[in-house]
Every structure is written in C-alpha cells, then in structure tokens.
Amino acid sequence: MGAGEDRVSGTTAISNARSYLRSTSRSVSTKLGLEDQNNLAGFGFILPNLVVFSIFLLGPVLYAFYLSFQHWNLFLGEGEWAWTTILGIRLPVQNYVDVLTPPPWANDWASFRSPSYNLWWFAFRNTVAYTVVVVPCQIIGGFLLALVLDSRIRGKKVFRAAYFMPVMLSSAASGVIWRWLLAKNGAVNEVLRPLGLAHGWANDPSTALGALMLIGLWGGIGFNMILYLAGLQNIPEELYEAARIDGASGWSRIRHVTWPNLRNTHFFVTVLAIIGTFQVFGIALVFAEGGPHHATTTVVLHIYRTAFANSSYGLGAAMAFLLFSVIFVFSYYQYRLRQQQEVEY
Image 1 (cartoon, rainbow, N blue to C red):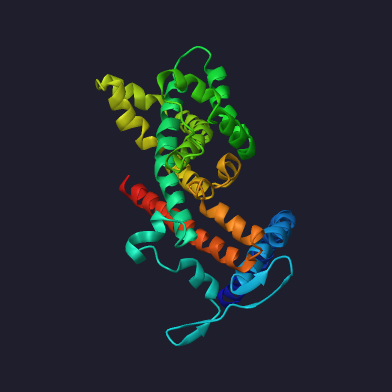
Image 2: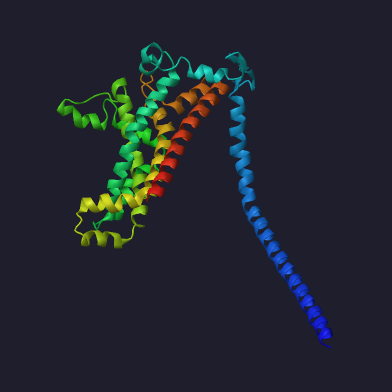
C-alpha cells in the first residue's frame, strides 16, 4: 500500500514537472518571440534612415576614398591608378605623396613660410593658426556670456537672441557683411580713420588671417553660449547653496562648482569647435577668396579649388581624407581625455 502511494506521488510529481517545463518553455518562447518582434520593429523604423545614409553619405565617402588612389579627372569622368614606389613596394598612393611632399621641415620650414613650396602645408598652417586662436576664444567667450545671461539681469532674452543672431546667418552672408565692414572705405575704417588707424584689413597678408579669425569668433561665440546655458541649467542649485554656506566667493563658486560640473559640455563644445574651425570654408571663400597671396587659404578651400577648379578630383579626395585623419585624431584624443576625467571624478 505504501509502495503504491509512493508510485502515485512520484508519477504526480513527474507530471507536474513536465507541465511546469512546458509552461516555462512556452512563456520563454513567447518572450523571445516578443523580443524578436520588437527588434524587427525597431530595425524597420531605422531602415529608411539607414538606406538614405548608405546611399547619400556612406556610398559617396567610400567612392571618394577609392578615387583618392587615382589620377581622376572630374569633368572627363575617367582616370587611372596613381602608382608610385615606396621602399621597393609599388602602391597607388601617388596622390598622398604629392600632397605631403616636400615635407614642412624641408628648406628650413619653407612650406610654412611661403605657399610657393607646398600650398597644402601653407593652408594647413593657416588652418591650425585659425583653430588655435578661435577655439579657446569661442569657448571662453561663450562660457562668460552664458554666465552673464544666466544671472538675474533685465532683458536677458533679448541679449540671448542678439548674441545668437550671427549663428543663424550663413557663412556667405557673414563673409559679405564683414568684407563690407573691413573694406578700405568700410564702416570700421571710417571709425578708425580719425585715429590714424585705418587699414585695408582684408587686402594685407599680415592682417587678413586675423580678420578671418574675428569673423569666426563673431559667428561661434553665440552658439557656444547656448550650449553652456543649457549646461548651467542642469547644475543643481543645492551645490551653489552649499558653497555659499561654506563662504565661497563668486569666483570660487565658478571654479569649484560651475566649471567642473560642465565637463560634459566642455567636451562637446571643444570637439564641435575644433571640427568647425578645421572645416572653415565659406567665410574664407567669400571674405577674401583665400587671398591675398593665399593668406586666408584654408585646407578645405584648397581642397575645393584642387578638386573642382583644377578638376583634380583624386588629389582633392586624398587631401580630404588627410584632413579627416587629423580631425579624427583630435576627436579621439578629446574622447580619451574625457574618459580619464570621468574615472578621476
């Protein structure tokens, strides 16, 4: 009798276990099915953008990279591989060699002093100088403006709109406006002439690049101001209250509370500013057309003229990918630096 009851209870336990396994597997399969459906639905939403991205952006980029290894004439629509021999190995990299040689240190850094040796390195020098001056000034100027406009002042919405107005103008419009303002008989010289300081700012090789930097500052500070204003509004007010209780002055609160808590904004602003200044093109073309004597010729302007004015598309594509490499290195360095700062905090 006891043995029969044990067999019955054992059979019941096995049956219950099988039922549990069936229900569990059914629920798991249902869950997996829902997850698959959600994944497919998400993929369906991004598919149109993915197709557009591949056709109109990724495809042309890959094709331009392919053409950078060829002597390609844009108007004839034909070309041949740009072969050269490096260390006994035959490679289709003649375009890259032509761009980078002679190196900037040859002839006592002649390529940095005169565009007649190597216009690529001279344009690169102009672009780096523009970036080194404009980026820090844009960041500091945007940050200080954001601090002022985040305080309790009257008419701050009007000031925000006024400072952001240059960002809304196209680079062509900005170039035309400043070309008129800085002309020999322009508004700026009309003010400076009584002081004996009138000058042809855009026509002098020694001042043309500085004038271009001024335009870059005018157009970029307002954009950084908006980004910093957004970051300031995300800092908890309790941190400032605690700093005031501890007796921190206004400068101390900015240094120890505001600045550290904007590190993500700093990273974003810096990367965007570096990319934007390395790609400066429109204002350089419209303001002084790269002159005088290539004083305002930037890398992107040089690429444009090489590819489209001289119809050397392969050479221009090689320059474009060299510029991409430089921007990528700067962006990656900033990313790694931000990661280290996050670990420290």
